[in-house]
Length: 261
Image (cartoon, rainbow, N blue to C red; front, side, top):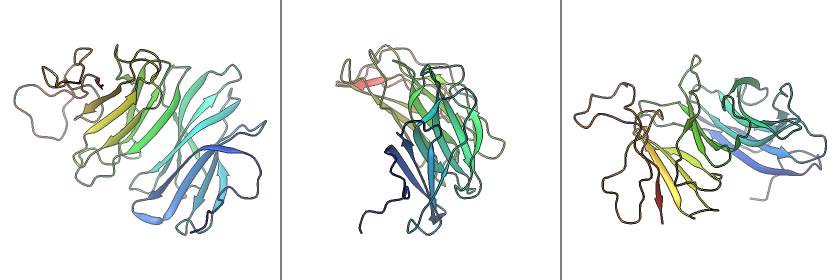
């Protein structure tokens, strides 16, 4: 198949594009990209209703105080809601992480929330939706980003009345320079895995695992296997979920960061 230009006739340069199809209806596809042209203020969005054969351009909504938007991320939940994340960046280069939703297959977008709380240095976020039919957390929306050195996670509970959790720092002393480049994924059971490189410091790849909907941290094996590090203590036990109550030890949700050498 030949390359297909989805951004229309504009000559504005683009970067950092993202694309997702609707798992329940693969004919519906959304995408997004940065607009690098001088004076651009909003994040370009693109949508297709015929499996990517043709595309229409649209955009997110500007938020007060921001000079431009950056770092696009998109996904879908099973109710047909399209999701977009972006950074709202001020003229002073302070940045906040925003979420937007669309209920018309990506044609129009509505501001939903500031995900990064009071932070002013959020950067390079990634989105992930739990699509597993066997997960107790199906349709939760996850995001990971860094704010300088620390790495943070937030999750939005499923459904129209869902809310984003406060930013949770999942990195520790093992991340020594810049926590950029993180990713988040889930498995069939709803366990959540976050990975990031300490590329400019130890050059390790670090990960944490959650078994409780991305609320807290699980300790790694003790002692950790060769090649892994356990730089800080586990957090408090997780809140109760629909899963059966486990036997000892008590449930915890995020693992202590472990870095592979």
